[in-house]
Image 1 (cartoon, helix red, strand yellow):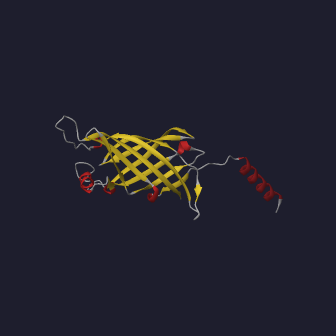
Image 2: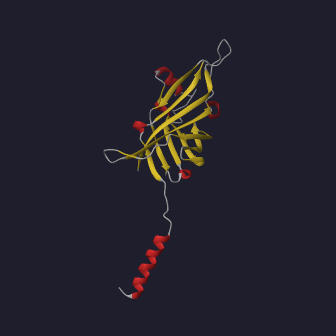
Image 3: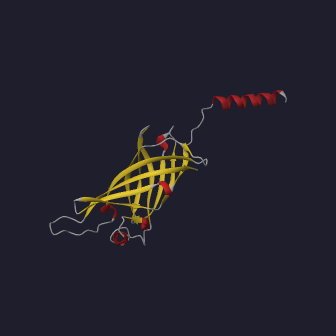
Length: 199
């Protein structure tokens, strides 16, 4: 190796050693078998009726060294709704509620992160139901560390929650009780417990 080549190698090595390492957020895929998207809404003003969507997919970007760069893209099969009552579930799939024939998916796509810290963060994004898109904030907490399974898969998990007014998404069906109250409440509380597989 001549003198010029040796100098070039030394220069490249010096630049590499003195340049800060860039940290890129890891890409994760939702594990649908270990992920729950649940909701609850007031019934008759006296109790909460709960349900869940049994089919969910999507991707998440998260790096514990840079939580402010987190992102999520979630797709829910609207027809997979399950409240443990077949008659009610079929009604929820109709035009009175989710209109799954025309709008088969519910989606959430994040746009920003707020209040990022070691214990959690607020994921701001667009929630689309029945073709209507509104900004919501998913409050993310219980973010686990990475775990490697016996099969070599790397996993992590987290929980998230938000509240929406269903009428803002065009879900306006209701019935008035004789006593003056409503059968179905307007506020819907949503909770997500997600398990992720590292891509």
